[in-house]
Structure formats: structure tokens, C-alpha cells
Amino acid sequence: MSKSARLIPLAIVTFLATCPALICRPASAQSIPFYCSKPPSRGLRPEQKVECEKLVGAKTSRPAESPKQEIVKATYPVKLPSALIIEGKPPIQLLFEAANDTQMTLVDPKSKKNVLLLQSKDIVQWVQGDFSGRKFQGGSAALVTASYVGLAAVTAATGGLGAPLFLLAAPFMGMASSNQYIADHRVVVRFINQDTGEIEYATIQLFGKKESLIVADILTNGTGLKASKKRDEDYLRPIRQSALEKQENRLGSEASKLMSVNNKKPWCSKLDLTGKAGDVTAYKSILDSVNRLRKQLSLPEYSQNLSASSDSKWVAYLAEKPDMNMWAQSNKQAASKLKDCSKT
Image (cartoon, rainbow, N blue to C red; front, side):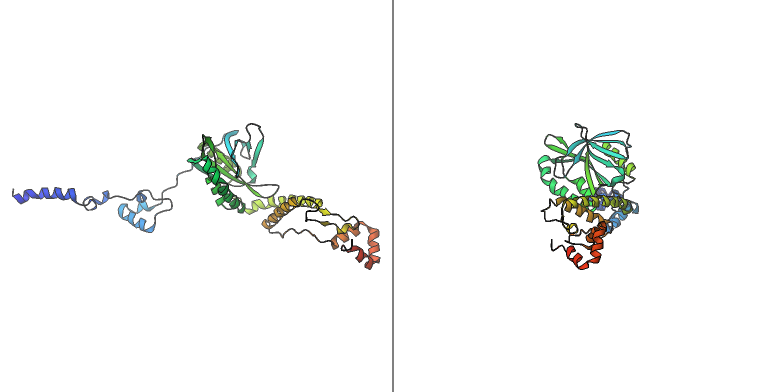
């Protein structure tokens, strides 16, 4: 064998040992980006899709399948350790109890008193979140909670989906371990108050995945709503109409306490909102609630006649006094002077 022939294998070995990896190794062994083998649920960007198709074929460009939701069925009666998170306050340790899927109660384990009663028919929307493993120091949690949950409360009042998600993520204190608090599983329930027609919310802390799934099963079956789905306006309208009637009755009751009564000329009695007749806070609060409901029901604003004299009051007075009515018809000029509330 010639000397040049003996040198060829040595040259090949030297080249293989030193050549660039992308040139020497087969195409099938080239490094494949992680997003090609495990595409994100949102899918690949156009340039990523082209690259992956070149490397491993078009099949890998399909979005990854969403994992199936684990389901745990509730076995009644249900009693679970929980906590109620209230804005700006430490969580209240309670028991979550349910005899069936129509009603859930948060009970104080010491006094056995009901702290919150949730009827499935009143629930407008619910969402849940898993924060197991996320830890917040008690001090830092207390500092940021008020602003974080406060923002959520504002969003909740507008009915936005962002509200429950903010509440789920808010770094509030959960189950205590030394000075560390662990936020595990939370469920935010938005419900309509049958008396006021207002949408309220409750953030419930649960301390285990199984417990969270049990509550989710109760809510799903009791409300007929899947997580994050909302009741439609047709469902809420009759509840709001009933609440409006109750609130306007309360408003009338509060108004009667603030009347400036004119015993000589009863038709000149008027609603006094200056504060001289009494505290107007309750009246104004109920009036705001009434007008919010009327707006939601596409009704005009509630108007309270504050004028010193009114034809309707005068007519109502004469209707109750037939003799006075006959006199007023016969003596119109004198009756007009008597009706005038500027001269009392």
C-alpha cells in the first residue's frame, strides 16, 4: 500500500473529529427547538412554524392539546376547612358546609354562626385558581393587599372578568406557617343580593386541590355555570325588578323621617335634605342604589319632588276634605292664596 493511501483514513478521522457539528452530523440529529416538539397552546409564530416544518415536519406545528380538567364529585354533606378573604382585613378561618348543591354556608367553627350564606340561584359567576406553592411573607402581603384587592373590587363593581382573576392572584394571607402564609386554592363567587339588587363577591380560600375541586363540582351542578361563565341579563332582570320595589319602599320610609311638616298647610310639607330634619346619609345611599337599579333596567332616574308647593299635594288634600274642596271651587282667588307655600 502506498504512503498516500495509508494517510487517507487518518485524514478522514482528523476531519470528523474537528469538523463543525452541523456539517458532520445527520440532519435528523440536529438540535430541535423545544417549541417544535412541545408547541405552546397559542400555536407557533409564522417563522417558527416554517422552521419546525423544515426540521421535523408539519405535524409538530399543531398546538398542544389542553390537559383534561380533573373532576372530583362532592359527597354530601360537605364540610371543608376554609377562610373568607375580606378586603383590607385578615382572613377569617371558617368551615365551608353544604348539604346539597343548592346552598353553601360559611360557618364560624367556634360560635357555629353563619357568616355567609350562598344560594346557587343567586350566583352570577364563579372562578377558581390554583396557587399551591406560591408563598408570600406576612409583612409584604399585608402591605400590598389593600391596593391589589381594592383594584379588583372596583373591577368587580363593573362586572368585568378581570375582577375575579385579580382577587385570585392577590397576595393575601392564607394558611399560616410561622410568619409565612401559603396561598393554595381560591374560589371567587359573584352573587346578586336579592334585597338590594347589587352584585357582591366573596373570595374563599381552600387548603387543598381536592377540596377546591369539590367546591367547583358543587358550584357547577348548583348553578349550571362552568367556571368564569356569567348569567345573562334576562336571568337578572326579574331579580333587579323585585329589588327595585323593595329599595323604593325603603326610600319612602327614609323620606318620611326627613319631612319638614307644615301643620297649618299640610300640602306645603316637604322633604328636607339640608340635615336639619335628620341624618340624610341613609336616604342618599338608598337613592343611589335605586338609581343604579333603574339605570340597569333602562328606567328614568327616580325624582323626589322637593318643591315647597305642588298641585298634586293640594289636589290630594282637597280630595280628602270634600267641604274644603267645595269652598276652593267657589273661592278660587282665596284658595290660590291659601295654596301658596311662600306665605306660611
